[in-house]
Image (tube, rainbow, N blue to C red):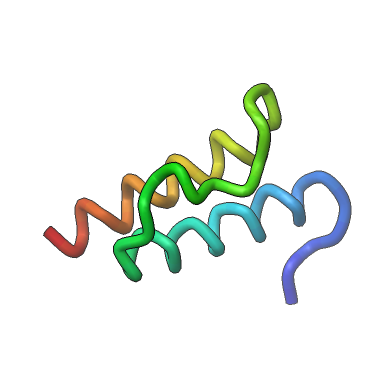
Length: 54
């Protein structure tokens, strides 16, 4: 079970971006606005997934 609250939101963003990276979605598909901590978590997971698939 994923935690709730701010930490849970970051974990969910990280998991969602890993899926986007594996699916070769464009990096511009990030659903979070600039300045949002979830955006940085999303981008980290995206980059990690892209490294694993290339």
